[in-house]
Image (tube, rainbow, N blue to C red; front, side):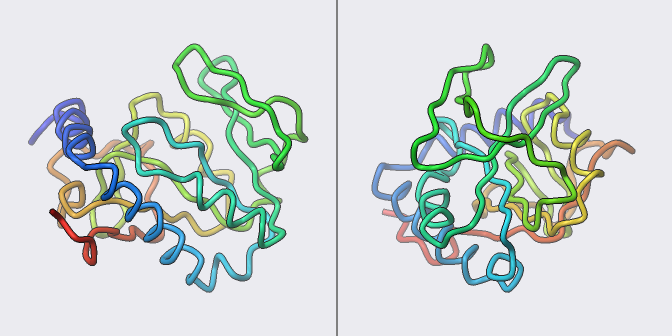
Length: 187
């Protein structure tokens, strides 16, 4: 059994190996595969994240959702390892949190029951929806409040048939993990 920290480090290394061209392909695949989902198409309020440097890019998906006139909500970290999701628009400004990620400034806090679709960030996944995030536990605390479909995107190298890490009772299971690089040119 591998520790979650070792799996996190390897998953980050796998993500760091990609060229700008491959990252652009991942961004396009994310939009194509996510927006094709019936759950996305039916959703009005979409919970997304602003990707950080080594994460799979979400910028184009956020722009696509806004162009489709969906309400896009992004996370904002609160004290005591809690988070809320806030509405965002083309005009939203952002500030850098002490952990380094950008968070929306202003906007309305959206209740979990208002959300119709969640794209859950993470580093490693199993095919049946187990997930390793960045280690703060924010999503594992927040996801039980949400009834919406919980979807993730990943790369083949970071998806496992069985967890190689310990599963904790607080770990939340996702509804679907979409693998992006099955059709990516790995030059």
